Length: 290
Image (cartoon, rainbow, N blue to C red; front, top):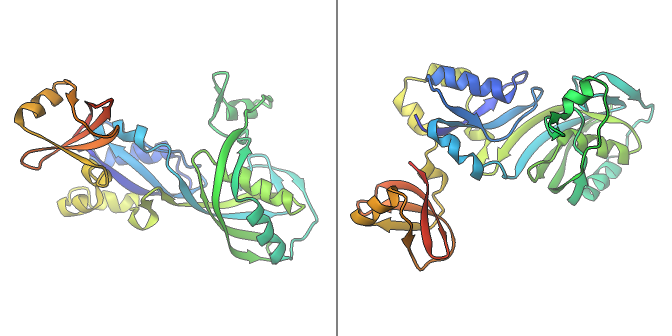
């Protein structure tokens, strides 16, 4: 099977755990995901199946949307619920107007230093490998962008803030939660995270692993829930090839078209979907074949 399935990742699973489960359920040898979610997090995880793993290059740079909760009063080693408490604060946040102003201040382009408990590699080692050994290493800052940061709810008694975040790829929500806490004059950590969108992949379209397992032999279910490459790229411009040019294209021969550079959907004359092609300098080269 080739396709994309949007899984609602359960809490406690790594992203790779989910991929392994999908492979086992569908009896597939190849599968991959398009962006890691922490074990604590739940929500949208696109899983690429079969030859569609080649599509990852088009899916890893997408914007994301999350719902997160920040628990004020404690700083945790990992920046989330699973880490040891390393600092505490007696400051009590009560002013929701101040919270909303801080959220507004955090919107826009900015640099962010990824947390030590992350899978980013520095000098060939993942940051969490350094952290677990108590080693320190200089972590390069990266540019990210927060597009929207909406106030959803604030539980004053439990000192827990719920927010919705729209952001660029590479944004660490744990770090964002700590930065918001700092601007409010206290410590805080991410107590909850749910990814509700990855570009056009929405939580409403995500399915649970048990539901996939129950319907793995249901052709209609799979048809309705497995996203094809044609559907994924439905908004791309279209190039139609006659029989001879189709053969040349599939054999790797570059074809001339007086069109703008970019990615195109390629169809045969009888309207069968072939795959994608990249046009550069008026030369069309095969990209990924369906």
